Image (cartoon, rainbow, N blue to C red; front, top):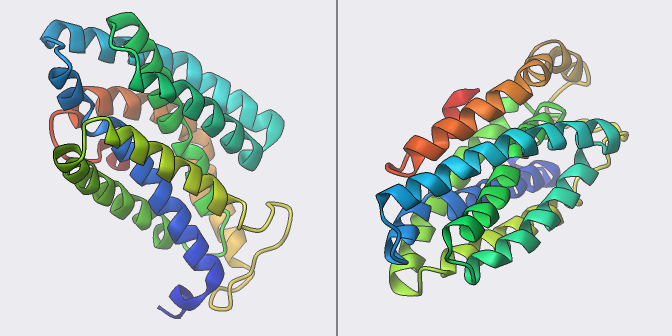
Length: 234
Protein backbone atom coordinates (compact mmCIF):
# COMPACT_ATOMS: atom_id res chain seq x y z
CA UNK A 1 0.00 0.00 0.00
CA UNK A 2 2.99 2.30 -0.36
CA UNK A 3 1.47 3.79 -3.50
CA UNK A 4 -1.33 5.26 -1.38
CA UNK A 5 1.17 7.79 0.00
CA UNK A 6 1.97 9.05 -3.48
CA UNK A 7 0.42 12.39 -4.33
CA UNK A 8 -0.45 11.27 -7.86
CA UNK A 9 -2.39 8.27 -6.57
CA UNK A 10 -4.26 10.47 -4.11
CA UNK A 11 -5.26 12.77 -6.97
CA UNK A 12 -6.71 9.82 -8.89
CA UNK A 13 -8.56 8.68 -5.77
CA UNK A 14 -10.16 12.08 -5.15
CA UNK A 15 -11.04 12.47 -8.85
CA UNK A 16 -12.90 9.17 -8.97
CA UNK A 17 -14.63 9.70 -5.64
CA UNK A 18 -15.99 13.09 -6.67
CA UNK A 19 -17.08 11.99 -10.13
CA UNK A 20 -19.01 8.94 -8.94
CA UNK A 21 -20.46 10.88 -6.01
CA UNK A 22 -21.91 13.32 -8.53
CA UNK A 23 -23.39 10.41 -10.48
CA UNK A 24 -25.05 9.04 -7.34
CA UNK A 25 -26.31 12.46 -6.26
CA UNK A 26 -28.08 13.01 -9.57
CA UNK A 27 -29.66 9.61 -10.15
CA UNK A 28 -30.02 7.58 -6.95
CA UNK A 29 -32.97 9.52 -5.49
CA UNK A 30 -34.51 10.94 -8.65
CA UNK A 31 -37.57 8.68 -8.45
CA UNK A 32 -38.18 9.71 -4.85
CA UNK A 33 -37.78 13.36 -5.86
CA UNK A 34 -40.29 13.02 -8.69
CA UNK A 35 -42.78 11.42 -6.30
CA UNK A 36 -42.36 14.31 -3.90
CA UNK A 37 -43.09 16.92 -6.59
CA UNK A 38 -46.32 15.15 -7.47
CA UNK A 39 -45.43 12.81 -10.34
CA UNK A 40 -47.41 9.61 -10.64
CA UNK A 41 -46.11 6.26 -11.84
CA UNK A 42 -46.85 6.79 -15.52
CA UNK A 43 -45.24 10.24 -15.53
CA UNK A 44 -42.11 8.91 -13.85
CA UNK A 45 -41.90 6.08 -16.39
CA UNK A 46 -42.28 8.56 -19.25
CA UNK A 47 -39.43 10.73 -17.91
CA UNK A 48 -37.11 7.74 -17.45
CA UNK A 49 -37.88 6.39 -20.92
CA UNK A 50 -37.26 9.84 -22.40
CA UNK A 51 -33.87 9.96 -20.68
CA UNK A 52 -33.01 6.56 -22.18
CA UNK A 53 -33.79 7.78 -25.68
CA UNK A 54 -31.62 10.84 -25.14
CA UNK A 55 -28.78 8.58 -23.98
CA UNK A 56 -28.68 6.86 -27.37
CA UNK A 57 -27.77 10.16 -29.01
CA UNK A 58 -25.51 11.54 -26.30
CA UNK A 59 -23.32 8.44 -26.04
CA UNK A 60 -22.46 8.63 -29.71
CA UNK A 61 -21.63 12.33 -29.45
CA UNK A 62 -19.33 11.74 -26.49
CA UNK A 63 -17.51 8.97 -28.32
CA UNK A 64 -17.04 11.12 -31.43
CA UNK A 65 -15.91 14.10 -29.35
CA UNK A 66 -13.36 11.98 -27.53
CA UNK A 67 -11.83 10.93 -30.83
CA UNK A 68 -11.58 14.56 -31.94
CA UNK A 69 -10.54 16.32 -28.74
CA UNK A 70 -9.08 13.75 -26.37
CA UNK A 71 -10.27 12.68 -22.94
CA UNK A 72 -9.46 15.74 -20.86
CA UNK A 73 -11.04 18.30 -23.18
CA UNK A 74 -14.07 16.12 -23.85
CA UNK A 75 -14.76 15.57 -20.15
CA UNK A 76 -14.38 19.28 -19.41
CA UNK A 77 -16.71 20.44 -22.18
CA UNK A 78 -19.44 17.92 -21.43
CA UNK A 79 -19.28 18.50 -17.68
CA UNK A 80 -19.79 22.21 -18.23
CA UNK A 81 -22.64 21.59 -20.66
CA UNK A 82 -24.46 19.18 -18.36
CA UNK A 83 -23.89 21.46 -15.36
CA UNK A 84 -25.57 24.35 -17.17
CA UNK A 85 -28.42 22.12 -18.37
CA UNK A 86 -28.97 20.64 -14.90
CA UNK A 87 -29.74 24.11 -13.51
CA UNK A 88 -33.18 23.56 -15.04
CA UNK A 89 -33.83 20.85 -12.44
CA UNK A 90 -34.28 23.63 -9.86
CA UNK A 91 -37.07 25.28 -11.85
CA UNK A 92 -38.84 22.89 -14.24
CA UNK A 93 -41.49 20.41 -13.14
CA UNK A 94 -43.36 19.70 -16.37
CA UNK A 95 -42.95 16.21 -17.78
CA UNK A 96 -41.33 17.23 -21.06
CA UNK A 97 -39.07 19.98 -19.72
CA UNK A 98 -38.02 18.07 -16.61
CA UNK A 99 -37.54 14.91 -18.68
CA UNK A 100 -35.36 16.66 -21.25
CA UNK A 101 -33.24 18.43 -18.63
CA UNK A 102 -32.78 15.36 -16.45
CA UNK A 103 -32.28 13.10 -19.46
CA UNK A 104 -29.52 15.27 -20.92
CA UNK A 105 -27.73 15.78 -17.60
CA UNK A 106 -27.91 12.12 -16.64
CA UNK A 107 -26.99 10.83 -20.09
CA UNK A 108 -23.87 13.00 -20.17
CA UNK A 109 -22.88 12.10 -16.62
CA UNK A 110 -23.19 8.35 -17.23
CA UNK A 111 -21.74 8.67 -20.72
CA UNK A 112 -18.48 10.05 -19.36
CA UNK A 113 -17.89 6.97 -17.17
CA UNK A 114 -15.98 5.02 -19.89
CA UNK A 115 -13.61 7.98 -20.31
CA UNK A 116 -12.83 7.88 -16.60
CA UNK A 117 -12.16 4.16 -16.98
CA UNK A 118 -9.67 4.99 -19.71
CA UNK A 119 -7.98 7.43 -17.33
CA UNK A 120 -7.66 4.64 -14.79
CA UNK A 121 -6.33 2.21 -17.40
CA UNK A 122 -3.72 4.72 -18.59
CA UNK A 123 -2.52 5.52 -15.09
CA UNK A 124 0.72 4.07 -13.68
CA UNK A 125 -1.33 2.00 -11.23
CA UNK A 126 -3.38 -1.14 -11.59
CA UNK A 127 -6.86 -0.50 -12.96
CA UNK A 128 -8.60 -1.90 -9.88
CA UNK A 129 -6.51 0.16 -7.47
CA UNK A 130 -8.18 3.28 -8.85
CA UNK A 131 -11.52 2.03 -10.11
CA UNK A 132 -12.60 0.69 -6.71
CA UNK A 133 -12.67 4.27 -5.40
CA UNK A 134 -15.43 4.98 -7.89
CA UNK A 135 -17.59 2.34 -6.22
CA UNK A 136 -16.78 3.80 -2.81
CA UNK A 137 -17.58 7.29 -4.07
CA UNK A 138 -20.91 6.14 -5.50
CA UNK A 139 -21.89 4.50 -2.21
CA UNK A 140 -20.86 7.61 -0.26
CA UNK A 141 -22.83 9.77 -2.68
CA UNK A 142 -25.95 7.71 -2.12
CA UNK A 143 -25.65 7.96 1.64
CA UNK A 144 -24.92 11.69 1.66
CA UNK A 145 -27.77 12.32 -0.79
CA UNK A 146 -30.23 10.56 1.49
CA UNK A 147 -29.10 12.55 4.51
CA UNK A 148 -29.26 15.98 2.90
CA UNK A 149 -32.53 15.08 1.15
CA UNK A 150 -34.15 14.43 4.54
CA UNK A 151 -32.50 17.11 6.66
CA UNK A 152 -31.92 19.99 4.21
CA UNK A 153 -34.19 19.93 1.16
CA UNK A 154 -34.96 17.65 -1.78
CA UNK A 155 -33.26 20.03 -4.22
CA UNK A 156 -30.04 19.87 -2.19
CA UNK A 157 -29.15 16.68 -4.06
CA UNK A 158 -28.72 18.78 -7.22
CA UNK A 159 -26.40 21.15 -5.37
CA UNK A 160 -24.34 18.16 -4.24
CA UNK A 161 -24.29 16.92 -7.82
CA UNK A 162 -22.93 20.22 -9.15
CA UNK A 163 -20.38 20.60 -6.35
CA UNK A 164 -18.94 17.12 -6.87
CA UNK A 165 -19.10 17.49 -10.64
CA UNK A 166 -17.01 20.67 -10.64
CA UNK A 167 -14.61 19.23 -8.07
CA UNK A 168 -13.93 16.31 -10.40
CA UNK A 169 -12.90 18.74 -13.14
CA UNK A 170 -10.50 20.52 -10.78
CA UNK A 171 -8.77 17.26 -9.88
CA UNK A 172 -8.75 16.12 -13.50
CA UNK A 173 -6.43 19.02 -14.26
CA UNK A 174 -4.11 18.13 -11.39
CA UNK A 175 -3.15 14.97 -13.28
CA UNK A 176 -0.27 15.11 -15.77
CA UNK A 177 -1.22 15.65 -19.38
CA UNK A 178 -1.84 12.41 -21.30
CA UNK A 179 1.24 12.86 -23.50
CA UNK A 180 3.52 13.09 -20.48
CA UNK A 181 4.94 9.80 -19.20
CA UNK A 182 3.66 8.83 -15.74
CA UNK A 183 5.69 6.33 -13.75
CA UNK A 184 4.83 5.26 -10.21
CA UNK A 185 7.63 4.53 -7.76
CA UNK A 186 6.07 1.12 -7.10
CA UNK A 187 5.11 0.11 -10.62
CA UNK A 188 7.65 -0.56 -13.41
CA UNK A 189 7.38 1.32 -16.67
CA UNK A 190 6.55 -1.92 -18.46
CA UNK A 191 3.22 -1.98 -16.62
CA UNK A 192 1.70 0.39 -19.18
CA UNK A 193 2.35 -2.12 -21.95
CA UNK A 194 0.53 -4.80 -19.95
CA UNK A 195 -2.48 -2.53 -19.55
CA UNK A 196 -2.58 -1.53 -23.21
CA UNK A 197 -2.65 -5.20 -24.15
CA UNK A 198 -5.34 -6.11 -21.64
CA UNK A 199 -7.67 -3.77 -19.80
CA UNK A 200 -7.28 -0.78 -22.09
CA UNK A 201 -8.08 -2.69 -25.28
CA UNK A 202 -11.06 -4.27 -23.55
CA UNK A 203 -12.37 -0.86 -22.48
CA UNK A 204 -12.02 0.66 -25.94
CA UNK A 205 -13.73 -2.27 -27.64
CA UNK A 206 -16.71 -2.28 -25.26
CA UNK A 207 -17.09 1.41 -24.41
CA UNK A 208 -20.11 2.41 -26.48
CA UNK A 209 -22.09 -0.81 -26.16
CA UNK A 210 -21.45 -1.25 -22.43
CA UNK A 211 -22.32 2.35 -21.67
CA UNK A 212 -25.69 2.12 -23.37
CA UNK A 213 -26.52 -1.16 -21.63
CA UNK A 214 -25.51 0.34 -18.28
CA UNK A 215 -27.65 3.38 -18.84
CA UNK A 216 -30.75 1.33 -19.60
CA UNK A 217 -30.19 -0.98 -16.64
CA UNK A 218 -29.47 1.84 -14.23
CA UNK A 219 -32.55 3.79 -15.30
CA UNK A 220 -34.94 0.92 -14.65
CA UNK A 221 -33.38 -0.75 -11.63
CA UNK A 222 -31.00 1.59 -9.82
CA UNK A 223 -33.84 3.98 -9.11
CA UNK A 224 -35.62 1.45 -6.95
CA UNK A 225 -32.74 0.01 -4.94
CA UNK A 226 -29.44 1.30 -3.64
CA UNK A 227 -27.17 -0.65 -5.95
CA UNK A 228 -24.65 1.07 -8.24
CA UNK A 229 -25.71 -0.95 -11.28
CA UNK A 230 -23.20 0.64 -13.63
CA UNK A 231 -20.29 -0.92 -11.81
CA UNK A 232 -21.45 -4.43 -12.60
CA UNK A 233 -21.64 -3.81 -16.32
CA UNK A 234 -17.88 -3.83 -16.99
